[in-house]
Length: 108
Image (tube, rainbow, N blue to C red):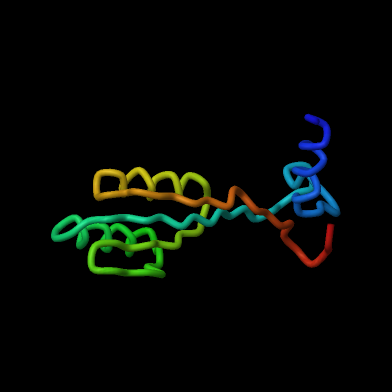
């Protein structure tokens, strides 16, 4: 029964065609995407917009009492943004994890 459950879960995974260690290949670019939901009003709302502007985060959804921000960059940048949003009403975060691609004109 456990094996059947494992098989069922593996069938739902996205197929992986190739894995490369870019740290050994050479120069590469890394980025992470996060969607960050902040709930607040008044000064906290204004401050969350100011911080988002500094981090070049984009407000992709807005209601009377909430924002959803989209932020891309290094893991450190995303971590710093999330930490600053915590006291302003952070309620939810969804992150992609790091994605990367080699620099230059040659494919891997």
